[in-house]
Length: 424
Image 1 (cartoon, helix red, strand yellow):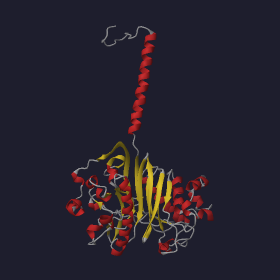
Image 2 (cartoon, rainbow, N blue to C red):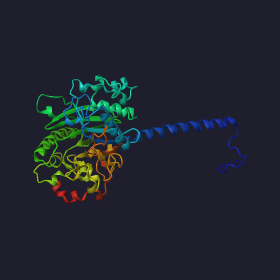
Image 3 (cartoon, rainbow, N blue to C red):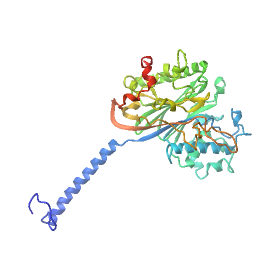
Image 4 (cartoon, helix red, strand yellow):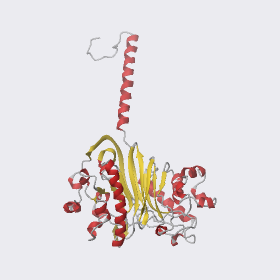
């Protein structure tokens, strides 16, 4: 057969079976090598996408009868109420990330249990012990004083597990009951995460639950999580003074991190109990978010300095920025704030414009769009006065801390453009 001629029907390229086998053998080896290198290249470029949710369910309380809240005493708050409340939290998590729930959840307002040894609790051991018992039975016919001593975040973890949301590590702020002014601080910040947990720090704050710092490892990359629940009273100057003190503690820690890595990947989230634009609402000389933490509404500022942080509320139109009703209008007390490292091409990256309010009609949102708050009618119904917030992130393999996401000029909010000189 002539070289270069297309094979016709009945033509045969090889003269002998031996020649055919040799060529096929070489070809198979080449194919195997190609597949190997292709798979290796794909693995090197593989990324891990994940979702972060921040949620204040409004005072999640256990049922051992030991509570600082009059509303949640046993005469009004039963184990059936607790089951309803936990099931509703699970429903929101399933809506955010169908079937499995978000990989990271930052919770606020879990009432801490008034018992020794709480912060060394073996959550995994509890799940193993009660693997064959559903949470409804644990809080029903099989309830015992020992079950009543399970920390409330442990009971929620069990509820998550029963509903198919598995694989979470639980981290609680180590804020022990103290015989001083902090004795009145009864809430804990809690984090559920599927990623391996590294360092954990707790910072005592004036007039507020302890702030948590948790470092998790996402596919080998460190991600810092700060979970906060600041002093309440958004319109109170005295409360703002307490928030300023809390922000000073947080900013000092951020400076330590940035001194080592200016592009560290950091998420600050929780119930800040103030408006995202607090500085522009009140003529106060110093505010926690703008003046101390240096939170801005312009993503482009992140390219120039690690001094600035970005508030994800600015991802949404001004009319859509609201997580709860306050004084007949919308408040924005639930917030998610990110560092410049989440905009570069090394480690973890924010998925631009993925931030959203987790408000779902016929679930946790009423027909008028306001939150379906928790109530005690019957065995309880409703969710929270706060809507959760959600954002998506992904790992990136470029390993370029000097390159940043391309952001169009129109992404800059009008408020920040008009206040650009002031924001410097």
